[in-house]
Image 1: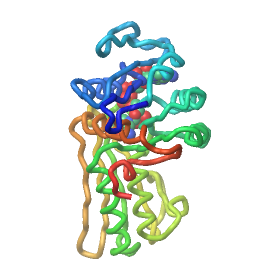
Image 2: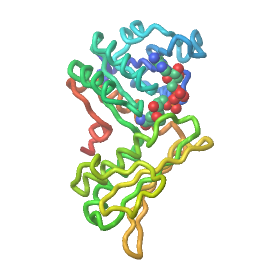
Image 3: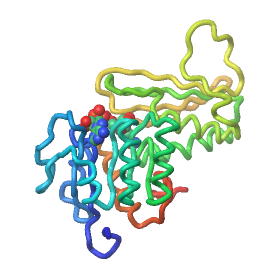
Image 4: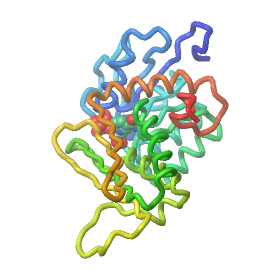
Length: 268
Ligand code: NAD
């Protein structure tokens, strides 16, 4: 059993230790006395297999061994990997912290199956600031109403695969919730060609890609002769890694189910 007051350290398996976020999680875990890295699992053809990533822990492609050695795994990989790992983790009743974005319905089903036997935290953004922004945009949308045109713009590094970002979608959905509407009925992901005048109540999301930008999001509310902008800028992946570790120590004490970062932060 993991920490939770008893002094025992939560055992963590990091997936994708050679990736940008995997490296940030390993770095953030260094020197912590409430958790320890128990395993690191990457795909079979990844660079860095066999390398020591933490005290006595070698990056390996043996998923079952990694899951058997941990209380909770942290997953910042890719949708197909997140699905396959969740299916395997259900056999081990592992808790999970999942930050992979761009998940589709089949991936969500695998996560739902895992959540029936284990507690899992799924969040497209683990930063405290972004989760605070979600509450602010929801309130702004509720107070200002759809008469103020709401748009979300997100900017990320050139290697990001999915668009719009998971965080931009969370922000746009929070605006829709503030308007009291179904997001899928009002969303507009990008514009191209003769799209006509902007319909009242539409929520637009635009994606910019370039350089090494870690993640920037702005929610705009355009009124008549005034506008409101609510922005968040990440300047280091360490904020996501710290949030994921906080989620990892929190989730191991919870009953089976799917949780998000608002649950971890007590903001629900
Ligand atoms: P990356 O490409 O740098 O790293 C991905 C890692 O996953 C690589 O090490 C790769 O080898 C590994 N991997 C792929 N398949 C695997 C498998 N089957 N088993 C084990 N490892 C496997 O990507 P990144 O920039 O670190 O981002 C990863 C994901 O995290 C993306 O979906 C990104 O959008 C998301 N992300 C989420 C947050 C958040 O706060 N939730 C923050 C940043 C990034």
